[in-house]
Image (tube, rainbow, N blue to C red):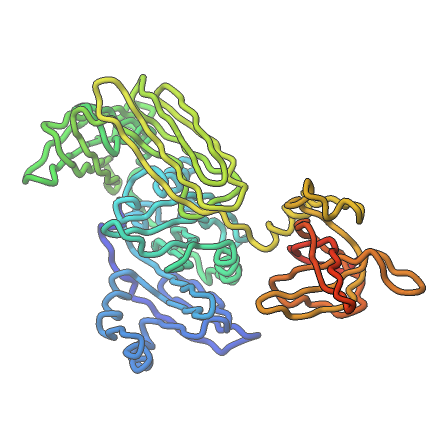
Amino acid sequence: MRKMLLVFAAALLLISVAAVASAETYSFGDIRAQVDIPSDYETVLTPYNLSSKADWLVSEGLDVDALANSFEAEGILLQAIDAENNRTLVISALRDTDAQTYFDLNNQSEDMRKEFRKSHTNGTGYSILGYTYSSAKWANYGKVTLRFLQTKYTLRQNGQLVCSGYQRRTIRNGFTITLDMQVRDRNAKDADNAALETVMKTFTFTEILPMPELPVKLTVSTAPPAETSESTFTIKGSTARKATVTATVFSLGSAGGQSFKTTANGSGNFSIKVQLPSQGVYSLTLTAEAEGSITAQRLYSVNFQQGVLPVDLVAHPGETLNDETVFSGTTASGAKTQLAVSGPINYSKTVTGTKFNFKVDTSAEGTYQFVLSVTKKGMQERSFTFTAVRSYTDAEREEKVRSQAKKMTYANLPKAENRGKYVVETGYITSIEKNIDEWVVTFALTKTSSGYKDIVYLICRDEPAWAEGDNVKVYGLAAGTFSEISEDGKIKSYPRIDVSFMEAAQ
């Protein structure tokens, strides 16, 4: 998209202010903004402190000059490293084509903001750069900061995963501004998003610049296809009334290009037909020109191959999953689309038609394999494979255990038919012992004047945060029996629970 064009790094005045309440405030002059960086981030790099941190950078195998060039080219204002949690916060600002088009998204129409949001998910320029966004939605951060787009993404280059993470992005004061929480060598987690949100809540603009003269409005309702088996297609949208709209296509394999023009009607609506001369990959530039206004542009990539079944995936999973996963998109009329899922669940469904939408229950933990197959007679079959993991946060895991756990009688706890079921029991800890790589807790369901009875053995992966005599509620899996040898040499068995978590009894 436009990220690749006019990438001018911000000439930024960055001032570090004294630490307050375990956070340090950084101010960014050109974008008129500031943010607090918590002390959790052991190392904070800016364009102005790279030389002073040269020894550390070299020890990390980094070239100071190369890093300075990267900061300038990518518009990086700040890079904060949280080594303990294996994540990096990157704040950047670019005077890119988007910034020149919108200047301030808060002063644009709802259609323009929708177009910007959709540019993160519908196969335009961000996908050309290697980004895959599994979510993109607007959030309002208060009277001054206002709208930022909240996204989750993965970044691949040359087929290799570079990083994944979460972003907050807006366009304001003439810059595309991004706060990016990046993780490498692991999947992005809810905790990473929460850490980004903590920083985001301190981000504020210190001054809002007035809107300058901007390019003529250009909203695209029917975009060029990312791939097609037909040589012709139609682009539709709206712009200024009587504006001239031009679609120019350049083949990536040859010099020269072709242009197709139309004039918007009295309401500003336009429809322009494009005909590609031959098969290949094309760069398409859509421009709108109106007298007295700056020309507006949109950039697209189109892959034309005869016989190829076009598939536009609008929604698909990233590398991590939530409770529900959605596959949606469009293909050729009459095509059959099948989604097959294996892993914690087995799922298969087929639909026929131009549009497809599958909603899959991915609430169970584990690794899921998704295979999306699209077929149509006389055209090449298309197949897309995704592997993703559903992992619970500690809070999610506890909530799911609570919803399934049932109280059982002492006699029913060790029965074979109850093994593997979640149970909840309240009682008293009578002893705690370490046994190689686990902790064995003796637990009594009943306390009498003469002592304890109805003994259960609890197996814990981690050392319990409780002491002998504590009255606690235990959640876990019924796991049959636990046997021990008494002093007289007899084997005695007790119910066993593999503990998920404990809490104070109420």
